[in-house]
Length: 212
Image (cartoon, rainbow, N blue to C red; front, top):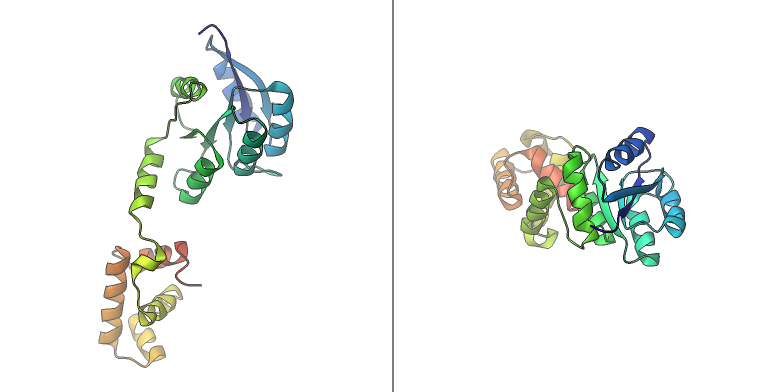
């Protein structure tokens, strides 16, 4: 490659910033041009450094990674931004980063060689997603919307009480129904939410705002 790829590292941990910058210097085609400790610094530094690729942490003070991605791409749409984070199971964070315009999404335990190759691909306009991210995105496409769960008003009522930690007997007493009826409702709820435990059902319910 005749030109070096200008890379900026954005992370609120100094050790992480310096570590990535130092490692990237080992590659002849990569040129670390600057480090920012938060999204605000990143936006300001972009105006002077004009990096080709940015390694962007997601959780930072002042302006977080998601907002920084949006603002940077508004001013510099040709900049390639790689979301780099420690959180490997946050579906909303992943979706938000990609919707904001991140070209790739990786985790910080990636090897330096893999990171260098991802930077090269980002520079060329190619996306790279960590395997865990691909898996989570596939799960999201398979997860029904709240309207598709088809829970009845009674089942939603039972689900709300499950979220409060009540057992079948307590729910039956509260709703003035038999325990067998409650057992039937709980079984139906688990089936419709495609889960096997009450804890999973409550988690799905909160995630999709089925209950308060």
